Image (cartoon, rainbow, N blue to C red):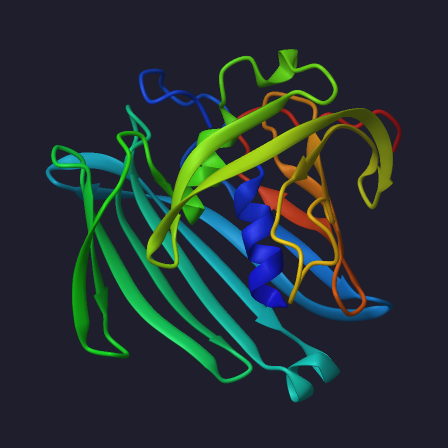
Length: 257
């Protein structure tokens, strides 16, 4: 369940590969509180730090997710998702995925070769290495969030228009599609926030109730950070709300406090 929330947060938020990002900066930190039904189930955070990869300055994003309280007793989750991507081009160089979700574990590191359009995945749990071919402008799951946040003219989308990007996840490349629903003002702990509303397409079945089971509210300002996520699951429902933030590059707009 925690992985679902982190994926959602990661899915919703960056510019073309040839344009410098301007919706975020080093030091940004976002925290979401997750509810499963009426239960406070856990939290997820995303933080941007500086790093160097391939002798280039990069953004190092660290995504954490964990369950709390009674939820932790029944279904313990400790997720660690990380990505290193170029500050100028947005292209990912490396991802880290180290998770424990109710006993389901993964411990992987992926290295992107942007010249050859490949990614080498080292699986420390199974002690294997494998190289995969990927499209020219592929993203990993974390860098996708920042790619979409600065997507060109995202604020010009009309209702029912969609965005599609290539994303490498779980040893394969998938076409991730995001449909724009419209705009809405929602009440939050910070006040009334103007949001853009999106609906990612997901696979119906074991986890999600339907293909359009997710709805995501993104701040309709220059930051474009996630404010709310709702999901209809195969069993129950999930909601995530913006709990705290700091280090935003732009002013966070609140209509009514």
